[in-house]
Length: 131
Image 1 (cartoon, helix red, strand yellow):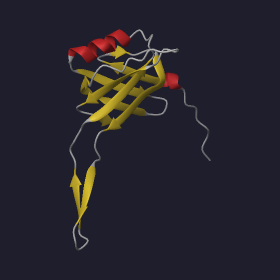
Image 2 (spheres, rainbow, N blue to C red; image 1 turned 90 degrees about the vertical axis):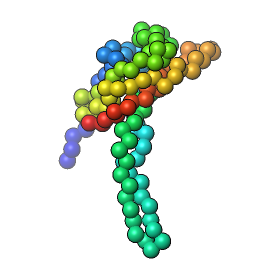
Image 3 (tube, rainbow, N blue to C red; image 1 turned 120 degrees about the vertical axis):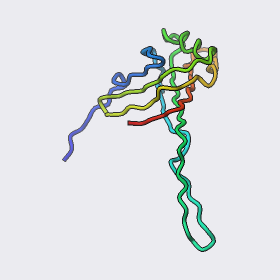
Image 4 (spheres, rainbow, N blue to C red; image 1 turned 45 degrees about the vertical axis):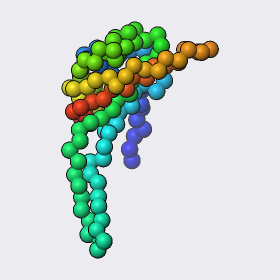
C-alpha cells in the first residue's frame, strides 16, 4: 500500500536566464513538447509505418503576477530577442524540464481591469528536454 504524498507549489522553481522567478501567478507554469515523438501511416493493405520525429522544440509558459519583481526582466527578454536558458524543477515530485537555448515568443497580453491580471510569457525552447 502506498503512502499519501504531499504536493506543495512552493517546491516548484522556475529560472529564466539564470534568474529565479518569483511572484508566480495562479497557473504558475506549464511545459509541453511541441510535436509528438512519432506519427504513423497505414497503407491500403494495412501495413503500418512509424515515422520518428527528431523535433526538439518545446514551449514553456510562465505566468507571473502583474507585481512580480521579475516582470520587467521578462519584458526585457521579450523585447530583446536574446537567447537564454530556462528550467522548471520540482524536486519533491521528481520533475525537471527546459533547455539551454530558448527565446521569448512575444511580449505578454497586458490586461487592465477591476483586478490586476497575471502576465503569461510564452517561451520557445529549441532543445527541450524532460527528465
